[in-house]
Image (cartoon, rainbow, N blue to C red; front, side, top):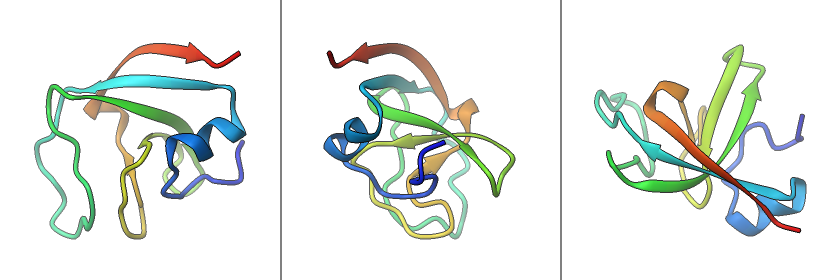
Length: 91
């Protein structure tokens, strides 16, 4: 488990912790929470992501790399909002 469970990571920062980048397409951008502050994904768009188990939520959350958001979830989104498409290994 990375120590960056909840953080606004850039692509460069994320690849220092793991030698791969996952890509996912947003399939559900509906029902943005009223208290969400920061970027919000657009349906149909492809994003570099990191999937991290959340201790606070008890489930894996999708972190969109390069997005900025405020506490408590920063740039983390529920997995039902994304379709994982591929993993690119950086070797």
